[in-house]
Image (tube, rainbow, N blue to C red; front, side):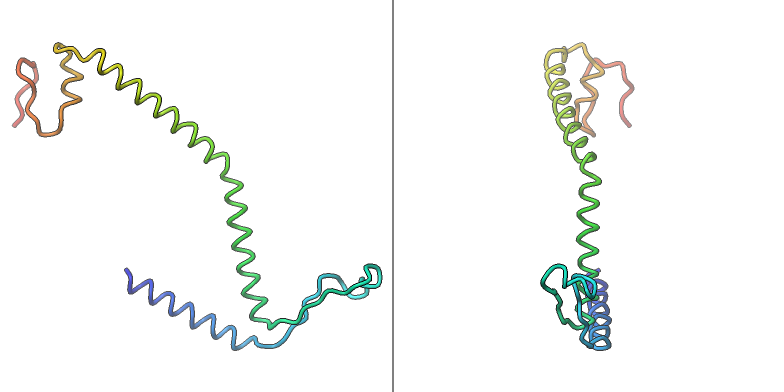
Length: 130
């Protein structure tokens, strides 16, 4: 598995280097449309290589996707947290009920509580294990 992962990373690196070498031309990135700077009083622009814009766009899209999914699944995380507290409460309740009601004559709970492979307690009406 480690070899496959290393092979994938190497192939990805080769593809990214090839894209970077093929798109080295400089591109001007402007924040506002042409002619709009006369209304604002300044013109923000930046000259970057095209491959850098491509890679930054991909990274930006991944980050936006992660944030979107994190926000979309917030209700699932809160419901899971609520249910965890409910399960913990019910487990405590079952434990206290077992302590209160685990009398020697309670064969069903004694069978459920015994570890696997253990022989049933003497006096039970169950058939012997084979």
